[in-house]
Image (tube, rainbow over all chains, first blue to last red; front, side):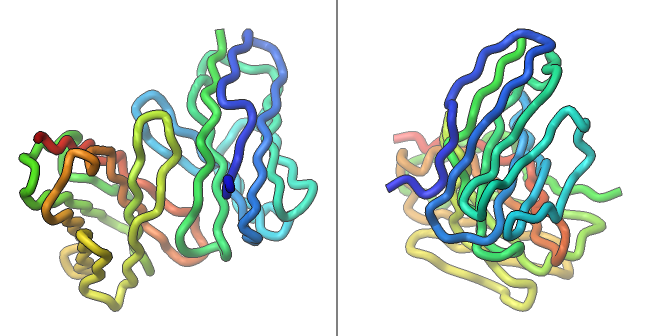
Length: 112
Length: 111
């Protein structure tokens, strides 16, 4: 049973396109996150949602828009993709907004 | 400025030895410190969490220490095995702020 799942696993697209990444967790957690891991492997928080409400929005271009239709899902939509958006994007969840987090397998986004 | 540093980018050790990984931080006041394991092409996996008022935490062959005076955590893997080869990330957990990750240490256990 997959705890945190993401689709797609790989995404290759051209500059200027709009794309979405989906995330689902079946752990019953209240808090979900999006992280970006760049080519230097540095993992950085982008957004955090608690019970469908945005609680953290780090310095991220407004081309990135998270959407949480319910507590178990947190999707990431990216408009007007740029070369610098190429990275691995991880979804994660936790029971509360503090404590251990459970990560999805990641989505490798390549913008050409 | 705030910094979180893991001592080395890569660490090679012989099978059966104890691996010790270091996490140092400056200008943070973490309530908790967490350690994760990340294998290539996979998401980080939670290993251990230690609270600011705890000195040491153990789980099977893993041991974590947390010294808030030195602003340092040590992560030990005893009787290391090739299967322990992975990147290990420390993360600072301050109340009401996002989890902050170090860049990780890539551990290779050589048979």
